[in-house]
Amino acid sequence: MATEPFPSSSSLPAADSPKLIDSPLMRRAGPELLSLALMDARNHTLHLFGQYQNALEAVDFKVPQMPELNPPLWMIGHVAWFQERWIGRNLQRALGSRCPPGQSRLASMEPNADRWWDPEQAPHDARWTLALPLPGMGRCRTYLLDTLECTLELLEKAGTDDDALYFYRLCLFHEDLQDEAFTCMAQTLGLSLERPLQTAFTPAPMALREPLLIPATTWQMGSPSGAGTGFSFDNERPAHAISVPEFEIDAQAVTWAQYVEFVGDGGYDQPAFWHPDGWQWLQALAAGEGEGRRGPRYVEQIGIGSGAVIQTRFGQPMRMQGTQPAMHLSWWEADAWCRWAGRRLPAEVEWEAAAHTAARRGFRWGDVWEWTGTTFRPYPGFAPDPWRAYSEPSFGTHKVLRGASFATRARLKHPNFRNFCRPERDDIFCGFRSCAL
Image 1 (cartoon, helix red, strand yellow):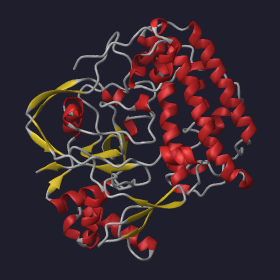
Image 2 (image 1 turned 90 degrees about the horizontal axis):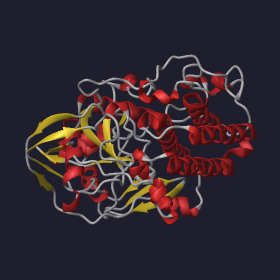
Image 3 (image 1 turned 135 degrees about the vertical axis):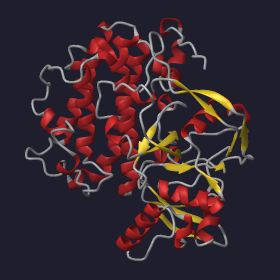
């Protein structure tokens, strides 16, 4: 696949910068646009944190201890800590992806930063009861601003090649990932958002198209590497050829109207539609809820006759339209729907090939993250990047999601990006599409 050239930031009209800093072209952005994008990301983090401040400041930002949550003050501190660790404290940052992950680092500007925000020193279940309690909101915000100032000063002196800019791009996309996690947490907690965010974080209805027939091909899977190719995550590399037979794939994600038919046909009561592990998950979940599960997470009501779906969205019950993508579905539920419909989840290579080649034919993506039928594994010849905790620990246990959601920053939306979650996850903004058997 040809790589779209990135325009020189010095030759761009100022009016183009806001569009470019939130576009996939940021994978190859130079220092000037990266500086703007890093400030944009930090502003977005603070804006989202403002929603938590409105709702939780009175209770000292306390949230329940759940697998899908983090203390909000841990979240914003970790964003700053990650950026400082890989840029401000990293004397070998100019080596880019060749930087040794375990080299000695400078001390943090916040003396207790590692004790609070390093996931190795503060594992998930310990973050609610740290021996040294997390600092208050004011100190966390100061750390956010001070680390960004340091990053921007170092970026002014950085080179312009991919190695020199690797960690600046990585930290930009890491913050974008954390901001989407912030948004998912707001949904889980039922936080009320200001109206513009509530509107932005609601998927739009889709124009429904017939499934697409994708011809057989030899697909170059993944992202290229080497000088001048820009940034990619380690699990996207190396690019490699895969022979893909002809297949038929949905033009858009499965809609609420389609999913309601599965519910109406007793889909949650018939083990024949479920993978054995999925059925076990469903029964355990039903036992925990007491009354059994009859629909996706956050769904309060499904009108089988009318097709009406009432789903709680950031604490507010909302009637979902039949042409909106079904959302907050686990991999088990997506797989069960496909079994019921006589279809299957796409392999991730099929999804990637369709996203690159069938956009002009109506292949629509980016409304919700989409489960694929593929277990998350390294590509042949995989070599980990310095952030070792990103990909390797999840190989073999997680399923691949492709695409993006309405809460994903546009610069992170790339057809080659591999999201990955355990099959029971349903708190993220996830749905699916299907393929013919």
